[in-house]
Amino acid sequence: MSQRLFVCLYLLLLSSSLAAQTRDYDGVPLPEGLLSKATHEGDFVGAWSGLRGHRLKHILVVENIQPDGSASAIYAYGDMISWGLNRDWQRYPARIEGDSLVVTGNGFAATYLKLPSGVLMANYQAGRAFSQAVLHPLDLGVDRPKWTAAVFEKVKTELSEQNQPVAFEVVIFKPNSEGPFPLAIVNHGSTGDGKNPSVAKLTFVDSAIAQYLIDRGYLVAFPQRRGRGKSDGLYDEGFSQNRSTGYSCATETSLEGAERAIVDLDHVIDAMTKRPDVQSGPVLLSGVSRGGILSMAYAGRNPNRVAGVINLVGGWMSDNCPNGEEINDSLFSQAASFPGKTLSLYGENDPFYSTKHTEDRFATFKSNGGQGAYVVFDVPGGNGHALSAAYALWAPVVDVYLDELSQH
Image (cartoon, rainbow, N blue to C red; front, side, top):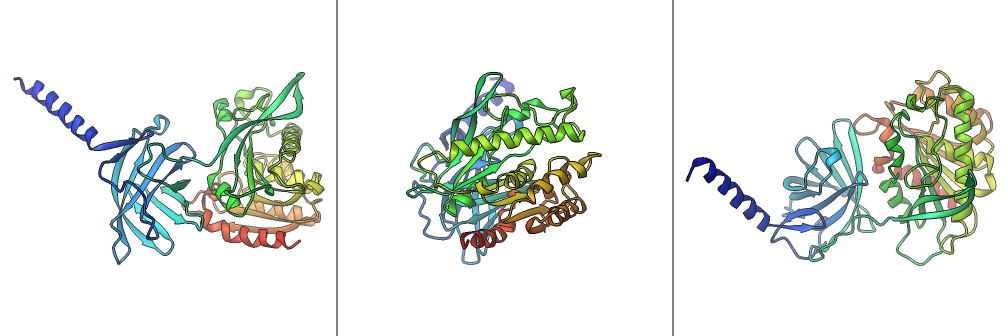
């Protein structure tokens, strides 16, 4: 037998042996011989499953917790070609720090915070990259793990475009209890510089915000505006005449795009508040980046429809845009007509909105009569625009805000 043939046969036998030692959980491999059912007798004993970055299938299994808090963790994931990942699993050292579990891997650190609802709120940091996941308790005897609590729907509205009805994709999360529930709507941002049309087809979900709000008893909806995700219509929120150059810095064009977003949000609220599982009355608005300032401006225009606003890193155009101040001031001035309190949360070193820029925009909001608080955080990884993923930073501040809202 030639040496080359021997090596090929050896590799074939080795791969067969490794395959026999693993079990496939809906595209995620795990080694055989693990507990068939998660016990959860300790703070972190057991297994959990979820979507990292809303897309990558991920399973965490925690083993061998020692009295000093050290442990080992199996970190497993599925295929994600766009991230350069092929399904695999590894054992990494872990440690318990208070109510969190920290797993240190190859070039990354993952922190898992166990919530009272039993789920894990996970943050992943690799350099400046910062992502999130919500992981659900997993019974390893079940072949199909729970990846997300989200329900993806197409919601019909009264809006039409070119004589065609427009239905919006809406991602919905509901508490595990009887409704109807108060409604919280979380609005997405832009597509970055607007030059890549394929980004518009990605459905926006923020698992940290969703889990936080459903734990507070809200039905949470993530609407995708016209042309975003799987929603009908054209995505046209302030593009240059040559769309390949991205968003326009011209004030009039940009604000026309914001007006289009306000119309979309109005139709989504009309449709969602007719649902039998939604309580009547004003809704809680939140949003990230463009979604944050959109929520603020909408509240100012429609104060009777809004209970409160949580604005995360909100702005319509970056301060790199020559007219960014004028555009954002216009929308914050509209927001100032909302008589209730709002909460605006920002991060240091935001590549789109400097702290000086957001401080000045909030000053505009206040000088026009706006009510609310402005808080700036130092976000892990150094990218302030990723604030929404830093659950442990903003959740205590939002708790105070929502507790105050509930008293009115």
